[in-house]
Length: 405
Image (cartoon, rainbow, N blue to C red; front, side):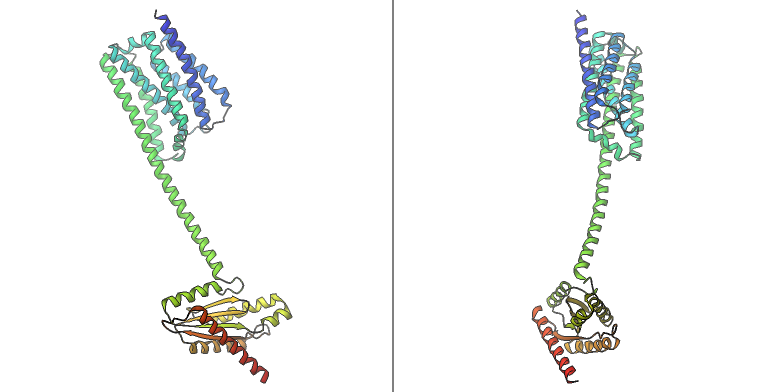
């Protein structure tokens, strides 16, 4: 009567071997391994597993030898990883430890529950095939779990070469040796209770330690990831700040003359008015630019604008704001001085520029000044209009003098 259960268990072993091989193929596919065509790999692994488990079921190989052969099959899986590095050994050792330690726990529980020593339990064909079927089932569950969480294996690539990685690999190899030593204890006729409790306790503790170690590595990897992301974010923010400053400089600097732009001086005026600070505002119109453009071309006119802007800026103080607001028109904001003081400074600057000349051209300009006393309620537009009208009065007066001369 025992032949029928044995035959059923052997069929179950064949079925589980095939399922395990297919699950292993699923794991390799999830990890995107393409060292060889994976469709040819899982039938080969399935045949090897079937042969190994059937030999164990029929001939009752020594348990340490059986575990060694099983470990050899798992090493064959290693060959199908892209790199034979530490993270691959970790995957192989983890799978071996989970399955074999679980098998030893099951053997210990059966031995304790049935009151049989391990030798007698493994000598019983039905119990032996039951343990083998349970081992295959553990393998199958482990492979399915890893294939669903294949990204967890990437942890070892992320921390490759670290102290944590090195210690974990060493620990898994020690765990393999420990499991093989535990299996060796099953070869001797030792007290049933002691051996069964030892198998259950030691291997359950081993599984807990592997899980704890994996959790710690996951935490370390997460911290490393967050640190990397923080560094990357800081670098991105610095680059963004640099780009913002570059864009701001583009918006606030006239590309031709290097003077500030209309936008900048208008913002500056609004700031001074909001603070109620005193200042004088000058509106400047460059003389002769149209004649130069008509006679010598716009490139000559551009050179004239550059020369004027450069030499005019040389006569200003650090706190003065000089801006080109369009064409040949400029504005200057003189902080903390009256309109009279601003006119005196501009007259001095005009005399210097007219005396210096630029390629036989006189760097002459007309100007008008408006004043914003402390706490003024004048709007920005009124100050600009007042300075603009004053500039036209200056231009008209100078033209009359030229005509009279």
